[in-house]
Length: 213
Image 1 (cartoon, rainbow, N blue to C red):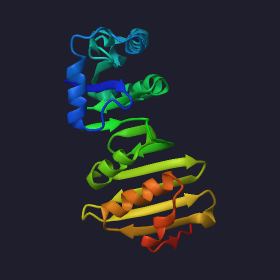
Image 2: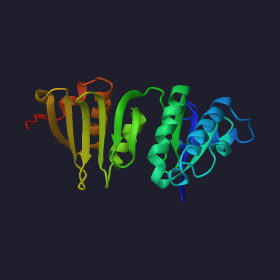
Image 3: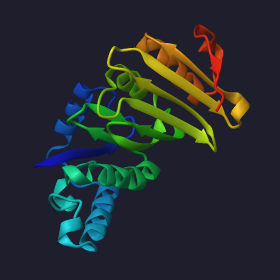
Image 4: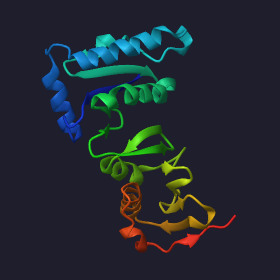
């Protein structure tokens, strides 16, 4: 079995239905030069690997559809392939669509950060849409999200089986490391986005305790 990921131009769609409409509209259109270039680079990198290390389930060139690119990847290579799509697509103004999870990673209005989703791996930026979708659905085996914007500058949350969240943030030094608990996923999402956008106005919604080690 394989897993599908799709590149499409940033801003082309903002919802799953809009993505489907956009992709349908690409049928029969000539290959866009940008996605053809990305597909060629993916095929080149894949060809440099042994068969056992291959990250493509089919040639990327076969997945070009107008200005979109469908990429098929083995399950054990999802993180690697998604990382390549970010590497090659983001600088060229492309978003990454995950049709299995209905996640749209669009660099438009994003905040650059080292983002680690416990169940899905690493992302190079955060958007309001993603954090709103991710936080309520965090679950095993990795029910956590970490957003790091500098050395020892991060905010993270862990969702427990009963639905409550542990939150921590650190502003670099040990004396600026605080923790709190929350039960409302909306508050957690708001605080993480506020952290990423340097808006701490909502942090008074929780009682923070300094962490000591």
